[in-house]
Length: 327
Length: 225
Image 1 (spheres, chains in turn blue, cyan):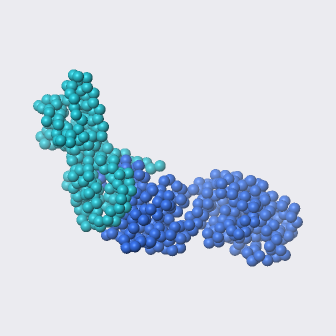
Image 2 (tube, chains in turn blue, red):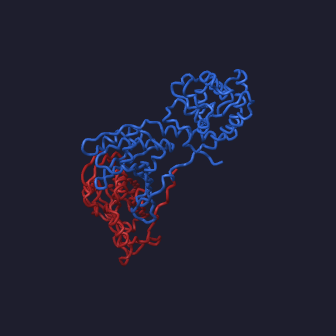
Image 3 (cartoon, each protein chain N blue to C red):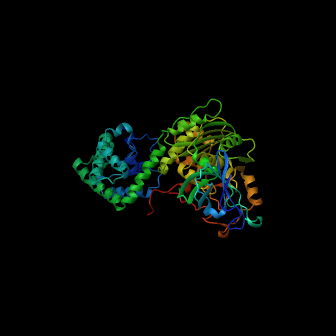
């Protein structure tokens, strides 16, 4: 029996189950795929899980199935190549489209066949049904899943987008640090950081405060893109010598040039201890918890007719806009 | 030096005032208030003083200077603010002559105007005050207060030197602005700036002080999209 199917039907497998994650995380390493635990899409995940449980509870005695046994694990990368129906379902979700009834059905059949072939005599009763009977039962399940998705298509799409963006945050593609000889190589840093797609206006090493500040324009990406770009800059800058803090300043060139010297210039900066940047560079893994290291400051507009201005700290959560609409 | 208009004419606020037009060799014309069709001074969104003048008078062939220097306004009883004093670089001019009359329209900006237009690129290692002084003095005399010993190592690649200085200012805690007369650029740390504000409250202006145009206090907040 295939080792990864040994836990079919266990309570643990069911508790960790998330259908959306099963589709979208397929082909990713186990370290990257976190089976939806980090997401705000728990309501959708539980709605899908409830639909599967309800369907399973109505199966006849000779076709009993613990719901989690149908999706015992995230499909590994090597295996995904042999799963055309799951690939099709995944592609549909990655395009933020609600899968069709046929796509759900075919992916479920493919999964059923896979488990039956690997688990053999140890499989639960449902996997020992005749194939045509199983197909009919799985068609009912596919209909239930489509119904959940279509009940609130906007929310479904938001949950998918959120999940995809969370995966991108976790993708271990952070660049390597730039090594310096002696002093901070501000020009070298600017060159490397510009390769991440950012326009680098200034790289400033303030020696008294041991702070390295990067002023960049990053366009208007999604929050997930922005986080990944920030993380990339931090890892590149993490090997700078004589630095206790790294600051990432974002601004808009046109706004800065045209803004009033006496007021708001549309800038924001995030401050990180160098230790956090070094840890990030060492692991090259970005987790949601990493952002707890960030102190966020914005320019406070002044009401006086002067050039005086000052920074105010705001919570990092102020920057984040939830993707999923409230229900 | 030629005089245009009546030297004995008074400004609306009671003092004698004049514009002195310079070219590369020095002062060329003195313009007296009776020729001022319209004159206004505004603070541009870039923070630089912006002077706009429309002159009308007898026909003449004005040689347009590269620099317009407006002498300090002689306010009545010494209480009026120096509304139109300062040094301005001409950005735009338009002249019409018909033989008997002339009209000259001038728009000019203060010392920061030049820095707004100049790019700033390169690497600098050394004292902050040295960097600021060498950068600003390309445009106007610069007074630096309170930056002390502050070694920096910086790479800059910006279309606007002014914007680069603003980023440095918000990063390191200093301010940069024109002096109130638009003669020079002033740079000071936040402590000195606070002291300056407290010791020399800003002058409140109203329309009766003005010959024309408008004056704005503060700036509308920008809504980021």
